[in-house]
Amino acid sequence: MRFERHKVLVRTKQKSNKTQRWVIKAGSNMVCSGGPLLIRAWMHQVAALKKDHRIEVIWVTSGAIASAIDRTQFNKPKRELAEKQALSAIGQPLVMDLYNLSLQTVGLLGAQVLLTSDDIADKKRRGNLQNTLEQLLEWNVTPILNENDTVATEEIKFGDNDALSAKVAKVMKADRLIILTDVEGLYESDPRQNPNARLIPWLSSVSKTQLKEVGDQSGKRGGTSRGTGGMFSKLSAAQVATTAGIETWLVKGDLPAVLLDVAKDKTVGTRIMGRR
Ligand code: GLU
Image 1 (cartoon, rainbow, N blue to C red):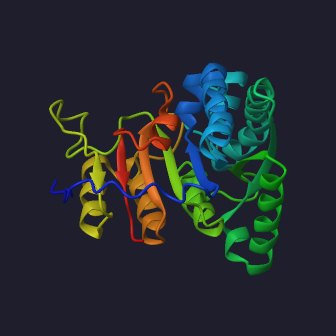
Image 2: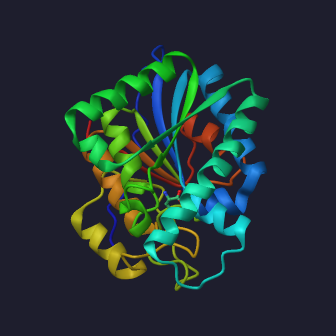
């Protein structure tokens, strides 16, 4: 794969005295395999981002369906769409419990926001969403978003909230979108097939050709047994966000202090600069 590499021109520290806004997205596999300990580590970092780096966070999580499967021993190999929706209704409060308990340990409060891409497309509902999120952030409450799977199925069918997180980042004028995944970042070729594949640390943007190459390589319907998002959906989300000028990072979610490393602009995962 031919990804154009650029010299890392370290940007002048972004808006050093202004609060920055990040949207951070955690996928089903990360949430379920990492469990309470990983969520606790993330929420500790969310508190530190605010306190030490003036970064406020809108968190987008998946994992409702996968948590319900783990809890109920639902073991049909093929799940119908309505079954997934019902599982998500069972799993959503379980996932929120994990976030709330972890936030409590750092003196913070979480708020559940369930939404669909139709809510974002509709001007009035989009305005309501913006107002709610702005109010929560003003109160220093951490919004925890997920697709409302009982009424929408887009992210269940494909994407594991990758697309949703990019749309939210645009609507909320985020400075960065951070996608937490179970691989180190974007590789020059598929690391499952080529153990010598090199990680791409830096990209200026995501081109149509790159997207096509990743789709051909890893399959457009990538993902794990737990969630529907693969590298193609992550890179598509990155393209949407970076085209809107939102720098996007694809990073391994269970690296210790990964969010703080991103805040310090350390070389971690794949950083996609986007248009300014
Ligand atoms: N919103 C879903 C969840 O929280 C998406 C998971 C999927 O990709 O199936 O479980």
